[in-house]
Length: 154
Image 1: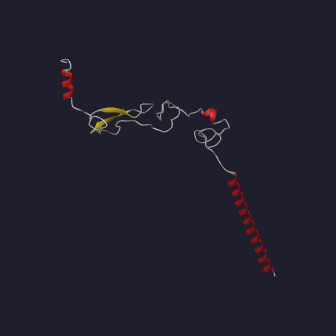
Image 2: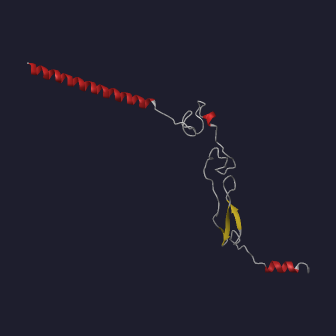
């Protein structure tokens, strides 16, 4: 029993650090956030029995990886995922992931030129009517000229 007296005294004299209803002990710290890729963990501190906000955490720089930089920009544990070789996918005559249309736009370097048949048809019809209007304007102008010349000659 004499061996346990110092232990009992220590337990009785040791203050109770966690009070009922508290989440943590004031002054304690714990890591927060992720340390995958370019991300870095931060630190939460217990203040008044509650954990603080995460301080010093470095979050992802992007939701998607920047291709060919060798970094895990979105902190998901994979480097340069969803990236591709431009020579293989931008010239394969397929509408691949990230392309606006077949072999152009999006991740591919060349610009998509899209001129749908509807727009071409509308432009053609408009040009037809403009030309037709100009033709009739010139025709009417010619008729007036002929009529006015005939009046003068009589």
